[in-house]
Length: 309
Image (cartoon, helix red, strand yellow):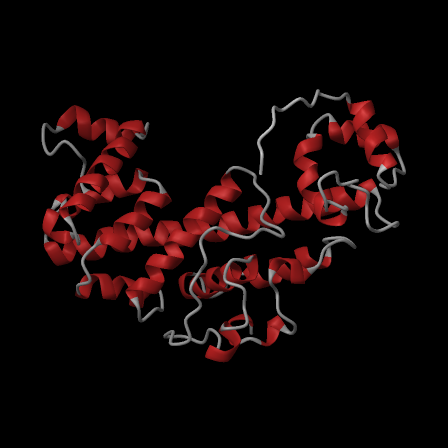
């Protein structure tokens, strides 16, 4: 496709409303709509109008393909997505804190070394060892935590604080890469089993996918109707009930439902009395008329799957 110069000019909020009306969006209260558009950008809301518009061809009309869509319906969908991100972020926090804790405790005890993650023989390759050391060091340097400052002011070596300090301040992406590239020894298997998984590769994949999802939530990006870059693995040989092989093959691994199922599985282990499912159902019931569970990869009768019982 031939590239062309970008020549579109900025448009006023009044013009934004006018264009949306021309394209078939219904406004019950234009003053209220303008107030929303002054706080939520026209371009940001485009992610929620786009699936309901004609976007085909070289010069698409962007006309709404349904005649019953109101601006308030778009806002309801936007609010749903925002509340869904908050629910996911809260659930991921439990998983992130747990992986920090288990990596630190289990490896420090097994290696009898406060700085076990600094040892080259813990990793598959020397190249990754050097890369992860740089990443951890960068994360620690960026940290403003008092316990990091205290370590630097009191101790001359090692340069990096012990695992129970350093791994508390690294990003989830760094944690994901760290676990993935640790040698497949008994300690790595124990970590996976404590998360209800028999295969270390599955946990490594889940942490990678969760890191990507967490970034979406942290940066307020759309999670509704999104195709995620990292396809999450859906195992059928988990320690606790998850879903059978035939069902897992029908679930789209790059859609939100697959991720939510894995989050639910781990949260049930870490916090057995959690209300993740109840809160999710509550959100789905209030998502508005444009919300379709299918857009997020939910199968029919998803609540009957073992993981969602």
